[in-house]
Amino acid sequence: MPVRELQVELGARRYPIRIGRGLLDDATGLAAFVPGRHALIVSDRNVAPLYLAQVEAALKGKTVKSLVLPAGEQEKTLARFGDVMAALAALDASRDATVVALGGGVVGDLAGFAAACWMRGVRFVQLPTTLLAMVDSSVGGKTAVDLPQGKNLVGAFHQPAAVLADTATLDTLPDRELRAGLAEVVKYGAIADAGFFEWLENKADALLDRDADALAEAIAVSCAHKAGIVARDETEQGERMLLNFGHTFGHAIETEQGYGGLLHGEAIAVGMVLAARLSSDLGRAPWADTARLAALLERLGLPVALPAGLSGDALLARMRLDKKAVSGSLRLILWSGLGRAEVVTDVPDLEIRAVLDA
Image: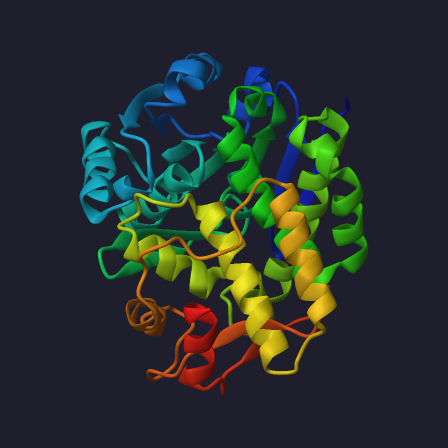
């Protein structure tokens, strides 16, 4: 299967997204994006035993150190950010150093934020190993860590030098993680591409069966949508907000569960259904489209209802601390049906609570 390549174009700046099998084995291709003398590879305990040796071998001849962190969203903290900074200091990393993020979204966000801050910004390369990271978090330069009060509240926009998505790593991805990544794939159809949504309905079984062609196409289409939106709105002043469809609800769920309940993609699946139901409650979207969204997510093995035991009041309070809120007023990403998302600022709390309480 040939390697697919897209470009993220940001004015005079650009970087590639490469999608294909065997990219971690391509020492020349990887080393080309690590031009300086120093490199710090950041990974986690799930991914490092599988792929760290390949990346270290590809960077042979450079001064390379590796930092392997515990896995999980609960590790995306200021304390772990401090660990990465300490590792860069121990490496004597100079301004031409490169941070290499080998893992899922947590590793990518954390390593990218450290790269943004070390000496006011050094290069970093994304080597995503989960479907969710390949189609979403590795592209676009959003880097951050979480606080107990909310997700991604401390961060920076810092674009990678390259995104190299080796789809062979999906062979070792647990089924639950694969399904969680498919939630973000569905999002692109829901907010921007009704034809892609229909394709996903037709290919749901193939995607769950890890059909290589179907997965590569899903990743490529998702990345193309993400790259286009980022090119038009790098720092999320307008259109890029639409990528947060379901995220205000989903992030509130994750935070309220202490980052130890639903996976990110699972929480986003629930959040998208809640956003769609709210849209239909408000008369903004057909109920038939909301039903199609919930049905596809369920076919993909994803949750579509709030976990038991979560308080509507607590979730609404979490949502008010969301980064999209302005002066205490919630900005929600709703839709007017398949492929048509919109930013809405005037939703009464009673309507939001009604959806949360349902």
